Image (cartoon, rainbow, N blue to C red):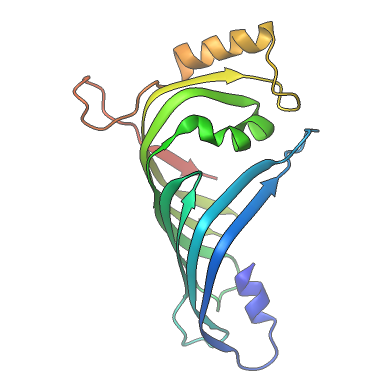
Length: 194
């Protein structure tokens, strides 16, 4: 964690600004066995980190970045105090519009969920981390979401996966979550509680 790394530095540390540009690729393997990791790629990444310091009077470290996530223009901002004994962080950001099936490189291997259809109109988030807990709100506006449950290792579905997909699409997931679209239902924000 950043506060641990900076706190372990022997002597005074002060870095004014670090700028990063390029492409960042990230892969994650779930606990169960899969053929390939879920892939997350940040294209056209441009970030700036300011305020890296182990001095108690220093303001929190700030991270600001813009990037394309699965083709959607996105931005994130984080504030991380470094003179603390636990991880503290506040982050907010947004993701622009994209065709939701583009997320399958992430959702199939990690969750066994193949997105058949849907369009993200946009997403915003505001999350606070305090030690092992996190809380906040995520606002996601989308239309025409349709998913198919599949085997995360092979990407294939069977009868049981078809039944789970029917239940998910009919009773669990909202096909649309758009604010003020005139259908009488308001967009439902997501609550982060970890």
